[in-house]
Every structure is written in C-alpha cells, then in structure tokens.
Length: 316
Ligand code: CP
Image (cartoon, rainbow, N blue to C red; front, side, top):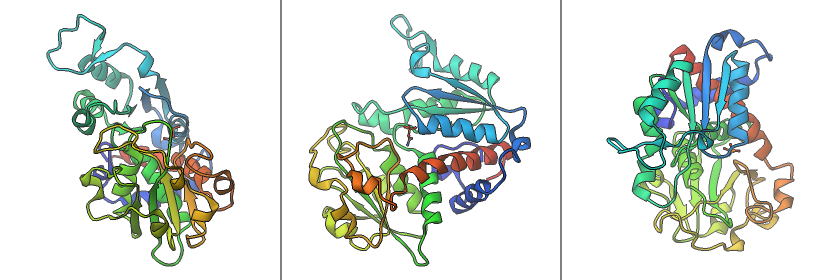
C-alpha cells in the first residue's frame, strides 16, 4: 500500500480486515521486527483520544518509533500557492511536508473540515496538500471528509460479531448540539459498500450526504422502519451537507433508546466515540452487553497495525 486516505487506496479491503483480525491474535511483542528502525510522525491539527493513542500503540507493537506533534499549536501553515506570507502564516506546506519527510518514514495527519466552504472541504484540501508535498506515505487520521481507520476498525468489529447470514447494518443519524463533520458517516458507507452486508442509511430530511458516498445505498427517512430486523445499528451525528455545516434540527426522537433497539434483531449498537450520552444514545443502550463501542475503539489498534504493516512491507 502506498498511502491510506480512503478505501480506494486498498486493493482488497476484505483482506485488510482479515489481516487486522490475524494481527489481533499475535502475541504482544512478536511483531517488532516489522517496523524496526522506522518512524511515524503523527500530526494533529485537531483533538483526538482514540486515533492518537491507538495509532501510537499500533506503531509501537510493530517496533516503530513515534513522533507526535500538535500541528494545530505549531507554526501556522500556509497552503495557498504563490501566497505572499506577510500576515499570520509562518511556514508553507511545501517546506513543512518536505522537512517532516526527512524525519519520518510515514506521516499521519488529522485535519477536520472548517464546515464553512463545502467545495474546499470536499476537495480534502489539507490532506491532499500533504500528499502532494510529502516524500513519504501519508495516512489519514481523519480528514475533512473521511475517517478510513475508523471504518476499517468498524468492519473488523462487525466481522467479529457477524451472524451466520448476511447481516443488516443500519447507519442512523442521531441528534447532537454541535455541528459535526460528515467524515465518519461518509467513510462508513464507502467501506460497508465493499462488505457483504445489507446496508441502510436513515436520517431526517435535510441530512442527505454527498451523492458520491450514498450512490447505491438504501436510504430511509423513517428511522423506526430502517431499524426493523437490524443486526448492527451505527449511530452518528453529522451536520447538513446540503445546507453546508448547519444544524437543521436536534430532534430527540432520533436518539437511540432501548425502544429503538427493540426493533432490531438482537441488534448490536455501534458508535465511533466520543459520544454524548442521553443525546445521541441512551445510557441503557451504551451500557448494555449489546454495545460494541469499546470493542470498536480497541480494534482501532489492529486496524492501524494492518495499515502500517502493509505500507512498511510495500504490499497492497
Ligand atoms: N473515533 C475517533 O476518531 O476518536 P478520536 O477523535 O478520539 O480520535
């Protein structure tokens, strides 16, 4: 694998899921030879708990050295070509990416969207600029429009709890007090369309996602109907794509409750975390044995290990 920014960078996503599951079975400390003498630089323009720590853990398990940098608090970067840098930006992406490439063998980047300018966000501007100017492979730690490491871990978790038949997987919008990116939802749809599942997307009117991610996906505006017989219920909030970055409603009727879960078929609850309790999901669901949220977070390590190993070995 040359880079990891979306499912399109992976020739066989199912094989990558199998690799993550296999890595999970390996004794701790047995894989250090894979990444020995290699370094990963993790650049965070935005906050993170899971991605930051699980990717470090993955790199350490593979014997790599890790450099972790709060890019959001570092020199402000200029991304525009031919900019006259006489205001606030201290360093251009061209130098920054080239310099970091001399220190690290892989660069990971977390960069959220501004949620103001849809065209700019959906060009995945910051991530693409790093890809253009870095001289080593780039891994997305969640970009403006995708969160592929999360989606890979989600697929791994679904495989571990998969029934003997083709499962029904429902991605449901849920309320939230703040305007959130569409990245997790976009990515989940993109990856699940490569999995052998029945995929259903449900959200209130106005929360339609970009067509490039929903093409071929069954969409329902009726959450109760969508949840009927579901094996996996993935809750996530996102702000409007159409009315870009806006909160159109905070309808508490879309929160995942035990009553909603009762419509499913012994449904497993999923969320990428962090989650707002009793806003997105009721305590009784999140604390139930059917909640996979903590397992999903655990699988972030094995997803990251599979990706880093594939890049280090130069395999697809
Ligand atoms: N799910 C996830 O990416 O969590 P963090 O934002 O804490 O990394």
